Length: 407
Image (tube, rainbow, N blue to C red; front, side):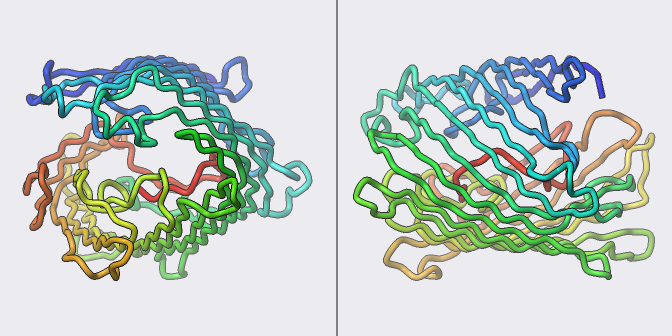
């Protein structure tokens, strides 16, 4: 498992000034045989914490040790970074949010009973995380300086996870014919901690449950429920969150010389007693792909996403091709409104993926988006190119303790 990597990623966008941006990193795997990976890098590609819609630059040092198997005992990570926004899209002085911050993020966990449970797949994992985000400069706009997004954040969060996980071997899920191990099982995590932000010192309690299973016919199903709340000095709940999600991934459907995978995802999010936490939006993973609207926020959200991937026999110099068709639908409403009060927002589109399984770089993907209804600042059409896209199943044994996320 020893190895090292020097990697350079590049991006060109004619709207940027300058048009070219890059990231460079050096990674040493399993330092001294410890299974601890060390990475040091500098980036102009906005792939750090990314607290805002501004493009961020930064440099960082990361040490991480994953739980490589159910029989491993330790996992954890350390990240130290310095990040700042950069006005590469030449926004006006009042429209650009100028800020910089530093981060120290440390977590560690222990796999309880890993050495004794060789005949069982059930495990218990206990972890503790400490996080410190310090703003060096804040946006000068008065309305932004009072938001939690642009203020120092410190927290300590502990988690105990009970999990049982197995793997199902298949192919043509995210790859182009290679064997893929799809994890399934159940996970329950109990969260407790302390947080300080905007002068508020609060405790936190949360719980997550996720169940994944594989049908004999080859269909994959995942159901999850997540709930969390802050508790202030008066023992009142604040910024409470309920998130329910479900996903379906079909078996490989043969049609002539083609193979088709159909996926369907849905989520329901509710927030209560909003204080300093952000409101729900419809951008990103829990909304409409490629959509970015700051003005659309609420306390209730229902999302439905569907996608069809068609694996074809097309081959050019060992590059294989898979067209993609997708659609997203989102309802968003306020505190005193029912969830279908406002008209929905939608996004539809198509694209194509290509990959050569003999080469080390990832999938290349092009997607075209169309939004029938848009918000101010959002275009009806969008074209996106993704290079070195690492498309894979994101399941894992454990992760760093974190608050329930909903955006």
